[in-house]
Amino acid sequence: AQSVTQPDIHITVSEGASLELRCNYSYGATPYLFWYVQSPGQGLQLLLKYFSGDTLVQGIKGFEAEFKRSQSSFNLRKPSVHWSDAAEYFCAVGARENYKLSFGAGTTVTVRA
Amino acid sequence: EADIYQTPRYLVIGTGKKITLECSQTMGHDKMYWYQQDPGMELHLIHYSYGVNSTEKGDLSSESTVSRIRTEHFPLTLESARPSHTSQYLCASSISGHPSSYEQYFGPGTRLTVT
Image (cartoon, rainbow over all chains, first blue to last red; front, side, top):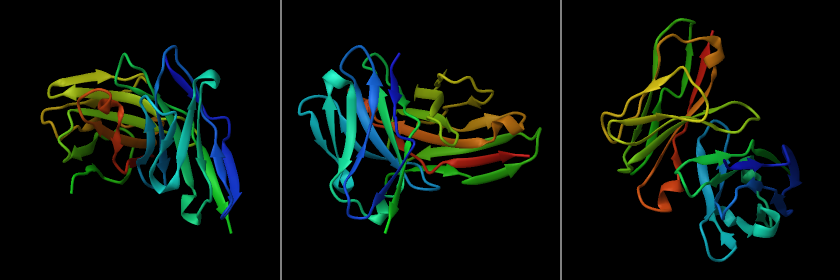
């Protein structure tokens, strides 16, 4: 079965600084990978996805992620964060043999002025 | 506008009550899912459905039940609520097709508190 680890529980970043959130997955084959964002009191919104092809994926709100097979990683990046990026971020992996997603425990991002 | 809706958004209820959490989507998606989310924890899949009259239990054991009589509607029921059921419940849906089916769209969630 697939699984996801998000090593950072909480990250604080200054507005305008760059952001990188780590995600490591466990799966025997090439997985389907996702990043979701959850604002307080809301559901999850899809930021970006990787199915195949180019390993650098562009998403909404200026986010990008890079799939590195050798490191089993799918880290999320943003060059310059805005106060509105304060939220919880979830990495998820989908196995090719079923339609289920497995989620990490999330990383909470705080943006300071 | 195509969307996924959950009602109620917040529910505080006493132990032993029967409750139904509603989930509806207007996106025409075949697949629907229920997740349980606790603070600092990953989302746990508790039920899923790949179409009308098709329901399956997820990876996390749950005392809740679901039904899928209409494509757009996927309610979750707890026959007798207990404090251990206190959690946030998220509903999601996805379209058929591969790999599009993995792209899940989420509702706003229902935060349930059982006293």
